[in-house]
Length: 84
Image (cartoon, rainbow, N blue to C red; front, side, top):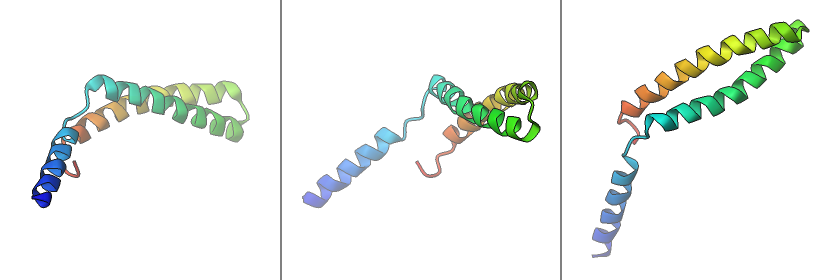
């Protein structure tokens, strides 16, 4: 009887976590991660080039391209059931 309860609890937990996240959550995660990543890129670019304007240009381009790539990467992985 105790074993059946444990199995049912685990099945319920698995079913609850199997639900995929909404696209808006992926979008917000993309934005927050890219802000951190872009600040890092700007800082590294500034250290390497010594030019803040060039570092900001690199950071801006990097922000846009990687945010878009991350969003689609998240959506694709959200459709893969492996590991859920």
